[in-house]
Length: 253
Image 1: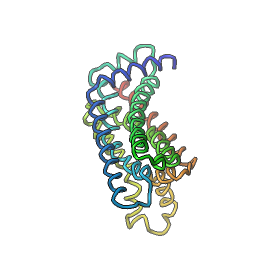
Image 2: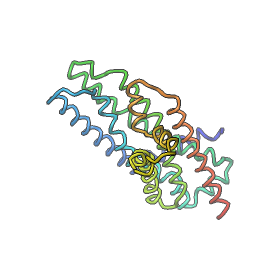
Image 3: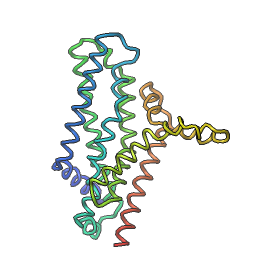
């Protein structure tokens, strides 16, 4: 793993010169900024039951669907298309180091963009003179959820990129997998089939896989180790499949 820092720094530089990175950043900050403004306007018209922080993090899925594919779709697929992946792996670096380097760079950028949204709450509290807008519980829980779930989201994007040579296809696959992860369990629970007798264990599993329920728990200050384990194990599996997929394609070529 001694080459990992070098690969990580190289991948960060590559992301910073990639136009897709800035497209993702502008879209993310614009969408979240306008959403935050709209939420605050709603609070000025009438009292709301939830806090601005809770309502803000409810929209986490918006940047996940477009930002994660944009940040990850080029990571491995472009290397394969240009034929540089094979050259890279013939040097004294392992597939694990390459995958972790690309994953780490995309994750750091993902977290950095989310960290920028913290200024929204600071500006709001500064100009409103009301520190209640900076409630520590929902804010800390929300950002912890973003950091924890982001591991799995970025890992899925890296896995999708390892499956295709075309980065557009990799982006579409990443979007489909993320859509399935976020909305699949909820849709399955609402189906008639899953309500049949004898499927209680499957229903319980689907209930544990609901990402929006995890968000609710985090913002309420409930850190369930089962949920954390779900994201960590899912991240590990996605990265492992990425490594195996790359090595299998190299052997086949």
